[in-house]
Image (cartoon, rainbow, N blue to C red; front, side, top):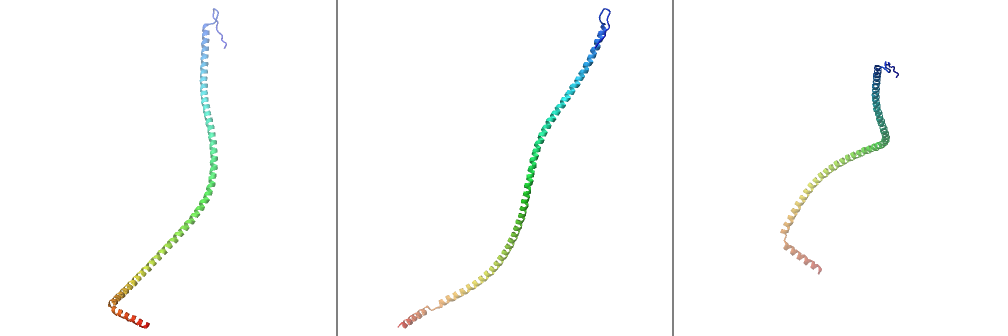
Length: 191
């Protein structure tokens, strides 16, 4: 910055010129300083914004790394789950075949049970019918036997009465005499 000052009469420079120059230079420096301060403040804000943006990018990068790690873990887990699902699907197919066979056997057994139950009911009904018939036959037989035994009892009682009557009327003394005569007759044959 080259400046030309007015010279003074007594040798040297004009004071007002120097003061004016100094004021002008100070103003220019203040303006430059203010501009530099504003620029510095803008740069600081810009740096702060850049720093925040950098921190956000670092955070995003960290989150990205974590997400990538999580993604890899999830991919491994998904692969494992896929293998497990395939294994379960194969097992499911085997179990479906077994279940179909079981259902078929169950239906067959149910048919056998129903048939057996029906035959049991038929047998039971026939047995009950036979038991009713036998019961009726035995009732008739019991009545007939009761009547026959009652008649037999009456006949026996009548005969016993007749026998008692005959015994009461019998002449035992005549029988003793007859026996004695028979004994005598036997002895006469021996002589």
